Length: 131
Length: 351
Image 1 (tube, each protein chain N blue to C red):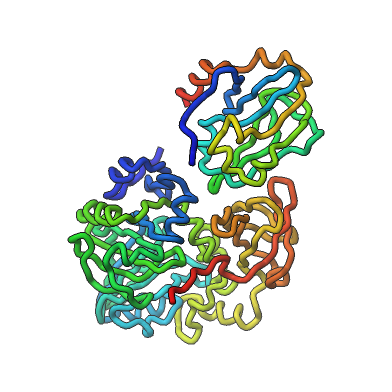
Image 2 (cartoon, one colour):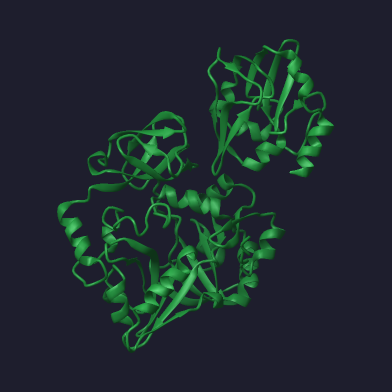
C-alpha cells in the first residue's frame, strides 16, 4: 500500500525531493512522499558502497520505477555508514513508508554546517506546491 | 507546442485519476492506480485498455486482396472472412513500415488496425500503391477500441470463449461491437471496436463488470514479458523483418514489397538478431543502452511476473544464441544478462 501524502516536521529537505534526518553528526537520507509518488512503485535501488563519500547536491545513487530512473541527490556531504539493505531487496518499502522503513542510507556528516542551507518543512511544501 | 488529441474516453480517464502523458500525438493514460497493480490485474483477472488512439484503415474493392497481398508480408489468401492475421507493411529493403492486424470483414473488405504513431505513414503508403478496383480509407475517427485482456476477461464481459485470431459481431453492455479475439498482452482476451460515440457506454459497462482500467505503462510491461515487439522501439524501417525475428509473419513464397531481400537474408542468415535477455545481476535495462560487443537495447523494463530486469535488443548473430552471457551498460556500470528463449512469461493454460 502506498502511504498517504505527508512531509514530517523535523526533517531537512532539498528541492530535489530528498530528505535528511540529522542526529548529532550523522544523518539518515531518503526521498519524500512527493518523489515516490511521481516515480510510482519503486522496483530498484542502486545504493552507494558503504565507506564511500557522498557530496552535497551530487548523486549518491539511483531509484527506478517501471517507467523512470531518478538520481538521488544528497542533501548533505558525508561518509556512507550504512545502506538500507531491506530497501535493496524490497524497493517498494519506500512507497509504503518513505520516512520510516523506506530510508535509504545513513551517513556521517563531514560538513555539518551545510544543514543551514536546507529547507524546513514549510519551505519544502512550497517547492511541492509550485512543482 | 503540439496540440494533443484526446480519445472519446478522456473524461473517464480523468475521473478515474489517471496519470496522462503525451503518446504519439495523443494524451493517453499511462497508469491509474499503478503499473504493477494493473499488470497483475491482467495476468490474474482482467484489465481494460483504451486503445482508441490506434488507427483503422479500410481497404475495399474487387482488387483489395491484390493490393494487400503485394504490400503485406503475410499470406492474405490464408485469411477467411471472420479471420484476423498479424502481418507487416514492408519496405523495399525488407524493413517494417508498421506491424498490424488485418481483419477480413467480408469477401472484398479488410480492416487494418495500425499503430497510432504510424497511422498517417501506413495510410499514405497504401494510398500511393492503390490499384484500380481498390479503395483505401482512413476510418480511424469512426472507431473507439478497447482491449479487454486477462484470464477472466471473457467471463466478466459475458462473451463466450472462442478461437484466437477470429472476430464476430456481438453486444457488450448494450453496445454493438466487433469482438476481435486478438491482443497485445499474451493473455486470453478481446479487442472491442465500437462506434466512437458508443465508447463511453462500452467503457462504463466493461469497468462496471469489474475489469481493472489499465494504462500504457502496463500495456508495455505486459507485451514485453511475452516478447511482442513494439514498432518504433524493437522494429522499424531500419531493421529487416528476418533480423527482427518476424520471419514467421513473412510468407516468402508470395510476392510482396521487399520479399527478394528477405529471401536473401533468410538464406544467408541475418548478421544481427533481435533477442530477448534477462538480467542476471540487479539492474533494469532501458531502451538505448549499449550491449557490450556491439549490441543495443531496444526495450527494457522490470518484469512484475519474474521480478527481474528484462529486455529486447539487437546483437551480432553470434551473440544471439540462447544462454549467451551479455553485459549491458547501465549508465556506466556493466551488468550481467543472458539471452533467453522467448517468451519470458507463458500463461497457464486452463484445463
